[in-house]
Image (cartoon, rainbow, N blue to C red):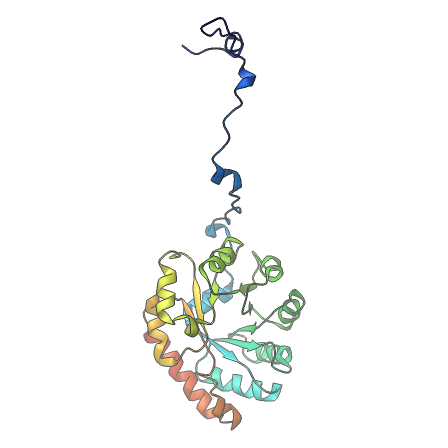
Length: 261
């Protein structure tokens, strides 16, 4: 039989002692629950838009990352890579005249997906977008950029390294993350390990990746890789050998087309 609140207050115990409910405060929650504070989970991925840049990156599987000594060299190297078949190109922010290069390439190659890399502040992000960048990348996670371009047509790809950084960026709204510096962390084996607990988080591998290893990274679970020296070879760049850059770009795109999804 259930007792009412008033009945509990007047309940008599053996010996005539009256039981006072105030003598028995409600039990405290377990110590773990009292101190555990979880962040709110991200919105369902199905509610977020898919920027065109994200679709293009997943289709290409290659992001050609260009760093040059000056704007003129950057334009020539970019043109050579695009002629070789590159469809997604990143210009590193530290390249002199990087934003002018983006503007020029957007005009001359409207079908190519262009982005700016090593973006470390929201101010630089806004400048890059104004110049025509369709995606932004950082070696770390910059919260102001992540929140500033969330649910927009501009794709932000934060750099992450550890499982905690991966989940934190994803939980904050990142649609894709860049594992950096991947070759120093174990290469494709590290990617494979990360994909076990995070099978639904899209990952890009970046740093020290060669053309020959593209397929291994795809098999490990990445949706794309960043290629820098593998396309924009340092010796070729120093010698203004843009034919070699075109050849390397073509080779990389052939390898990516043969890699398993």
